[in-house]
Length: 459
Image (cartoon, rainbow, N blue to C red; front, side, top):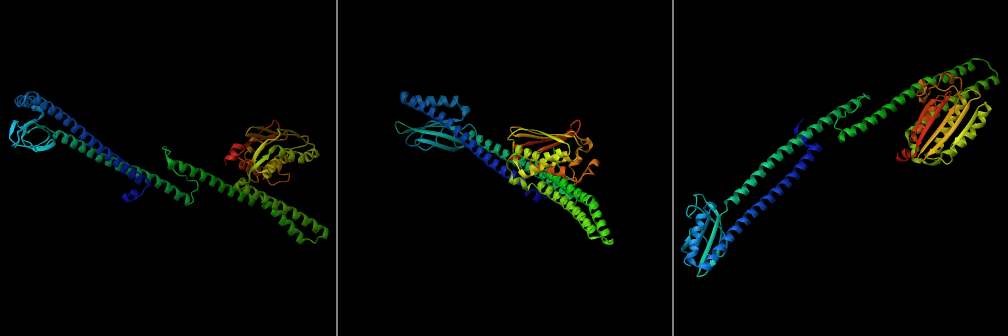
């Protein structure tokens, strides 16, 4: 991977930004430590010299010049390891005591650069911190001490921070290059997978590593989206195949009857019968297309924007009352057990069609003397709607297939219908965030739908 490509990545830019901020912080800390250390050592040295100077002046004030000379001589011997120097000069600048002469007769602090010309304990040049105070009789007392160690400590701190900066730059740049290279590798794998999908391999999915970083989370979401798109494409292909297969028969019948009517010399009444049959066949075909369009509209989710709070209990009661005479006419009984005022956030028209399709299915595809039970239970945000019958039921192997478009059981092929009733029900349930399950009623079929208002309102 070329360096310009790596340098243009977001991870490298962020690494460079954080590295720059860290270097500035590191530099600010270094300067602060250097100044504090230098100031502290210098202040300690000055305090030591100041104390020594005050003691010598007190000795002079109490005992005179002779005692001061004696004290300076003894001090010069006892503190030789500290490179401390003393000096007393008169008004003419002549050295009276000690060995420090190169200072200005001016009260205060002075830093004297001295070497071989001064009386020192080695031949190297020294930085002497000198405290000068005035003595009576126009004399000056100076006390100095070597301060090179302060400079050396400062240089050691500077050197340590320089090495620290080099190490930080090396590690920061190396880490940035590594992260950027890893980022580019992951992007390259995602790009290759995307190109494969674009090329037509719709089963291909974006790679997801074990780290589960931000790109992995995005890849997981995109894979879920691709799964959904793949399912929709498969559904469209299945629908196309089903339409071609299931509508071919009624259209062929219609064509055959119309051609037969054209070939024969029929009476006006017979022509009317053939035309009525053709109209009936066309109505069935149009109803099938209308059902397919309705399923597509429901699955698109466009109806969700018009969701309102509806009374599911009233819907179930209304549909049950409407179909009760139909069931009674066929010798079937309907019993209800409905909790009052069970509310749901959804589409009233679609929920009505859901209840109607399930109850009509139970009435149409069961024999006489069938017992049909309709129940609705509500508890907080949960609602359970159930329709159970004592008919032939649906074998377990077919329970998932009945939700496919145009799928019809063998015993149902003699009854009117297009095999889309359960497909519409499944689409409505999915739109409302519910779950539908088919089970054995021993005997018969039990259809249970669970709704959750929390799921619906969160969508």
